[in-house]
Amino acid sequence: MQILHPYTGSVQQYLGQLADPDQHRPDHCPQCRAKHPLTAHGFYTRTIVDAAFDGLIRVRRYLCETCRRTVSLLPQFALPYLRSSVTVIALFLVARLLQAKTLADALPPSSPYQRGQFWMRRFRAQAEACAPRWPR
Image (cartoon, rainbow, N blue to C red; front, top):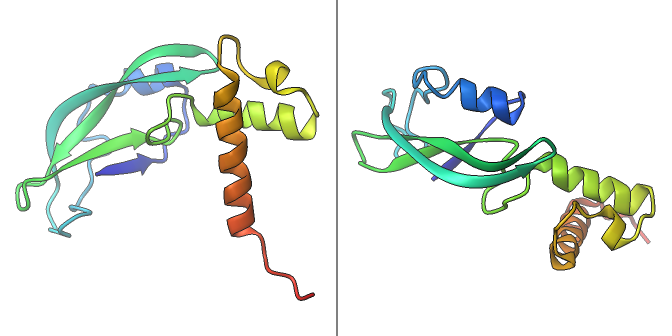
C-alpha cells in the first residue's frame, strides 16, 4: 500500500531527509488499524522526472508487525504509477490549456506525444467527474 506524504520541498531536499526513519513514521497501520508505530523496513527505488531532477529516488517502506504488510511513504510530488512529477504534469497542462501551445511545444523535451495525450485524457476525465451537475 502507498500513502502519499505531504512533502513540500524539492526532490533534492527529500533525498537529504531520508536518513531519519522516525521523521514521518506512521503512528498506526492504515490497513489493519493497529495502534502502534510501524517498523522501518528499507526502501525501494523508482524513477522520477521533475523540473530540476531526472533520476532515481528512494521511497521509504514501513512494516506493520501485526498484519505483516508493508506501507510505502510516497512523497506527494511523485504520483503512484507515474514517472513524471506533479510539477511537470502541471506545467504541461498550463502550457497546453491556458497558453494554447501545441502538444509538441507543451511537452517536456524528449517526451513522447502519447504521454501528453494520456495526461490530457486523464485530466479531462477527472474534471468531468468533479464538475457540478447544473440543472438544464
